[in-house]
Image 1 (tube, helix red, strand yellow):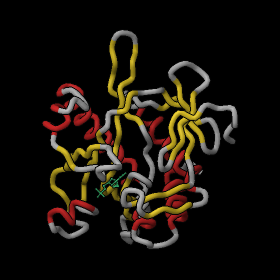
Image 2 (image 1 turned 135 degrees about the vertical axis):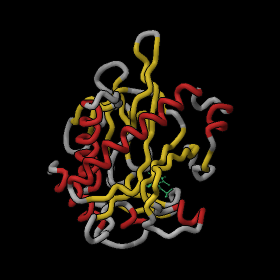
Image 3 (image 1 turned 60 degrees about the horizontal axis):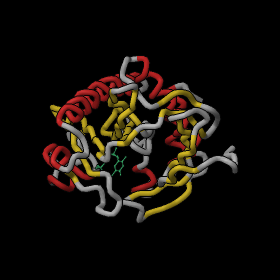
Length: 241
Ligand code: TMP
């Protein structure tokens, strides 16, 4: 449960950040709120927060164990996790293995087309501007990240993609695409790039291998119904329930 005396640092669309118990730690609270199309469509999906908390904790821990540093420290309870405080890089990284969503509209391609090479795209994180697609040169010229940081982000994103493709394939799910966020974690004089935010069906497209059934937030975006059942199915198949 949220403690009323906690200091709220930030409230986003799906999560609330509170000051953590130790310096440079944060408590990340998962809400049941869902939004789509840049906040134009809004609803509450009962139980989503606790499922996303479990799924994201499980995947972040696995990624930590691979030697890729993340902001994740531990899951605290049903809705909360303890994470390191990081300086978020204002770029959303989208990795695509199969064409779906905005790439289909942009290039007039059919949903479901296999991409022979995974595509890494960058979007500027700005609700006001509707998260526009940007190029590497924008990121560097506007000093959202350095060239070196961006190279690291690109390489880490592809490693995370390889890892997630394997995990989902082992439970009969196609990882179509997903969105990542990275941050800078200050350690001593230096800072390192770490995976931040969350890894959940809010930020993935997941299709059942056999039936093609959508098991992610597209159920909400496209009014397909049974969104929570799909999230629960992902959690069950991952063995985290
Ligand atoms: P898109 O096809 O709409 O560009 O989305 C690509 C992936 O990124 C998809 O898995 C959903 C995820 N995503 C987010 O997590 N947040 C967003 O704001 C958007 C637009 C997409």
